[in-house]
Length: 294
Image (cartoon, rainbow, N blue to C red; front, side, top):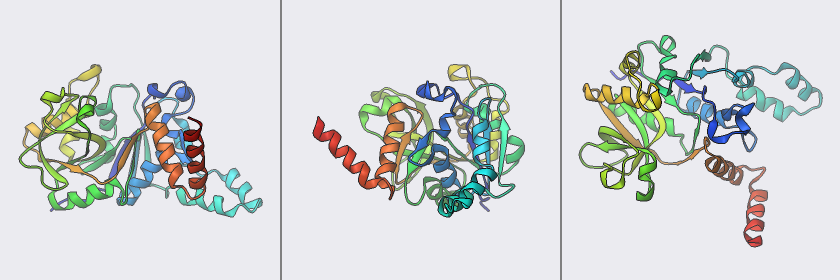
């Protein structure tokens, strides 16, 4: 029997060095994409996939994240007094139900694998999802929901991937397929970090969404440091794969945006502004004006 995915781990303890100085005082996950923080899009994706509990792995100077998901009593009361009921209702809708989120402190920046391992006592012995909040994925249905549906047919471990041009292969970690590429589910034999094009086993890059079995959490407990002197999630996944644990890549339908980079963040804002009912027409006009000015 395939165990359901009920818990998602969201590592939000990073410094956001690629978008400094903006992130000196504002967590990178809280940078706004149109009218809400980038993190809200990732949380919405998790809820839409049927996740019942989210574990945020936080660090120092990340208190704004916990405050954001709390009730803002004075603000909401003021909005109601001013008859701004629509936005007050939206704030209430976005607030998680009591007992559905947890915050765990990663006390030292020891890598993504260590951050995920910090959630071990909450995850326990059940499979879990990992969503990297740097990455926003525009898709319908959401990327994780697509993955959960695929997981229901094969179980095991699933890694979200999307195909990139040959010129970009050396910028990402890519998967090594096992056998023919037939459909969105791709059996995996391994992963390669930033390979030269001649050595790349595929053009499918790893995109920041994972469904993992509890043995990966167990392996993280004994995982040696890897790249950058940090405990890497990919190293523990590779050990699980070497031990015979089944892994599939899932080529989701959608577009990802790396909000941890300046250009990726700008692309995400632009894409969401063009879709938002309050900003779409104005955004199109601004783009047209900028193009004509050139």
